[in-house]
Image (cartoon, rainbow, N blue to C red; front, side, top):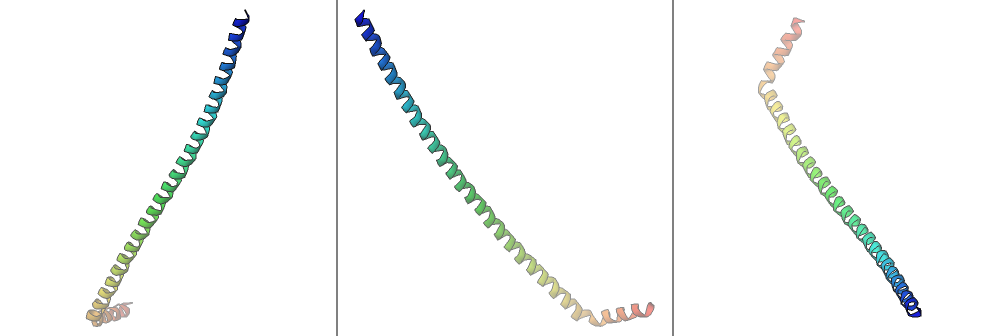
Length: 103
């Protein structure tokens, strides 16, 4: 009988050690998972910031390109108007004078 009690006591101690080991393993796995989550979050934030900066840079370049194009078109239109005026200023003046006389 005493031998059975000793065996049961050993089994209980072994079971207790297994439970303690399982608890330590669980805590270690939990800490590892938390660290992996923090690492993933940090990497995701860096990637997001990189993509945002890339989009900002692309939009800035596109804006600069469109502004340059707009300036060029505006300058061309002003040159065209100036050329038209130089070629037709006499006729324009006469037309304006005639319109003023009608009113």
